[in-house]
Length: 129
Length: 168
Length: 336
Image (cartoon, rainbow over the protein chains, first blue to last red):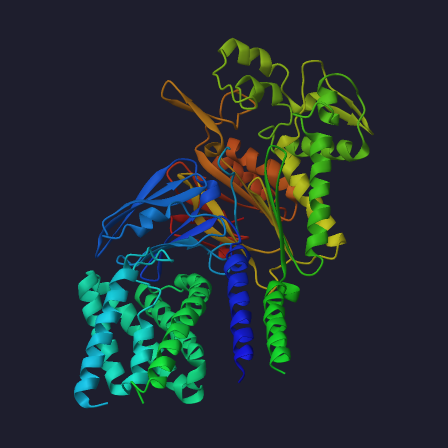
């Protein structure tokens, strides 16, 4: 194959990946429900729009404890026992953004898609804004 | 090349791969997953494949993965390096058969692509969720770019070496 | 040749990406906006979804302007300010329904509690505990029987004030569903400030799963209900309250005493195909307490079903929906 063909193929691949990188997160995120997973298992579902007070949740793993802070409309890892601190440095989970991952503890915090939240809607009021 | 020469060449290339590996470990990870690297040291494996031979290149890969993991103190990362390195090796082996050396950069890009695919696959298995796949698009972009750059470098060096009869 | 191949490839890649965006009948359109002092969340499926949702949002905003006491130009506000004694046919019909629900619940839901709730500061946010004498005085003007509607003419004594907020969202969800249906939507679910109402089934034909908010932790639920084509509305003191001197005061008042209803219910959920009824009833059941609620249901078991949580965190559910409900808590089925 001509070199030019290869260049075009890789350029196409680059385009698709860049497009996916920008659009996929927004397409997939369908609500305000966040899932906290450890080792692939769902530990807790939190509807960030219905959180009224700031609470913390500690998840323990082989690399120490991750302290997760859940506040109205936001979730982040406050502190962690792992050497990298990438999960803490990630900051709060953003709309259309990347998941918070602590690999040593196999902890993943991300938006849930409708298909996997256990419910389609929840009754009750949202937190007063 | 005589066996001694091959041995020496592999040693030098391994040193180069390790230095590159350690330096790129200092670059903050593109993803929030520690241990996933750009894969720049892959080009040494490719060069070894072309200049020295398949078994030597494989030895280089293994040494880079394990010694590199020990040197950077990230034993967790060894799994990703291994997974990525092996997949890349297979891809480049195949690529060398199908693609002529004057388009070596293409083989390098494929090597880089599969290197990242391997790392992501290992991460998915280790974390148990598919959330890591979110990073695949951006990693593939970096793979194409870094693979192309390092590949062109390798291609040019190889061409000169062959022309000057230093290598056959 | 290579150029053509490459360009075709790029086009194919872009096309693939675009295709991933739509999806026919399972195509989902959503909208979130602020109205009636709360967040409205609309979700509709199918190719008419987007048009349906736009129409629904317009309708909800129209009703907000028509009925909201907080809006000085609304018919209700003007009625309360004494600026007029007639309303539109739509408002008159809704008012008659409010009075009917008030009568049905023997005043547990009362559309004239507005001055009382206002005195407690639940509208302004300036929470306060009114003096007993103030409450006595305000109670004189409370009473749905004081209001009469004749055609489009409304008469009530001076001092009595109406607020249809207790059934306003129910009417809005019923209207929203009607508008969606007119637009050709067959599958949708809306959340109007937490009042859930479903149109039809999910696109794949299965039931919707509605989570019932947990009074102890509003970010999660205490039970899951499967439903289709019905509304699920929950009322509870935990939704809006303030604390003073160690005591908790919530926004659902007992129209007879003028104080926050204290009947032993933490959360009352009503399930029905009549959204207006559900909205009013959920408030009423919270005020009535378990025994009166059970009695009311037994007389009207074909009109609604309910899920009640008492202060000991025990759940009571009526037999009409008990098969569709799952919970980890202690649950008792109420039978006719």
